[in-house]
Amino acid sequence: RSAVISALRIAQQEKGWVSNATMDFVAQYLGIPSVAVYEVATFYEMFDLAPTGKCKITLCTNLPCALSGANEAAAHLKRKFNIGFGETSADGKVTLKQGECFGACGDAPVMLINNHQTRSFMTPEKIDQMLVEIEHGKPADE
Image (cartoon, rainbow, N blue to C red; front, side, top):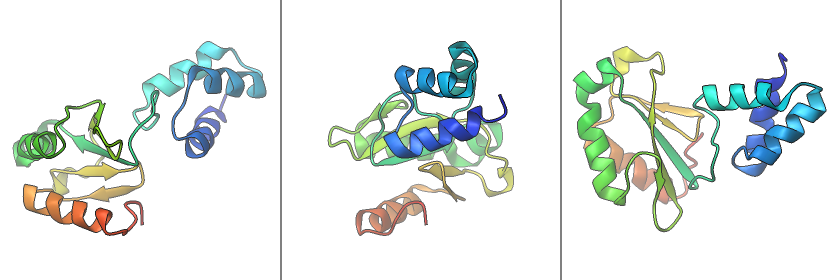
């Protein structure tokens, strides 16, 4: 059972998301019940249970981030891409997710890009700067 998270991470890296079929495969491979894999995949926010955009932006909205501007950052992102949390932009480039604490409350508001890179003190201006960098080919997960 200790290999479930690692197996799901590898599967998500390969396929871009974790489908029910992928969870069943992982369960069969590890010799455990499918429900055990499903429980892990649905508990951790890092696993995407549906296809996402090329750039997945997860914004922490817990209290420290909310008090430091996460609500303003969320409103800016929603306006910019005309989507809400849990949605992907019409062009398929961006998925916006609401996240739980990333353990960086001193850097609030905090965003996580593609489950790999944390961005701190994210004001609307810094968000726009980050998006320009990503648009111009700088990998979001460098």
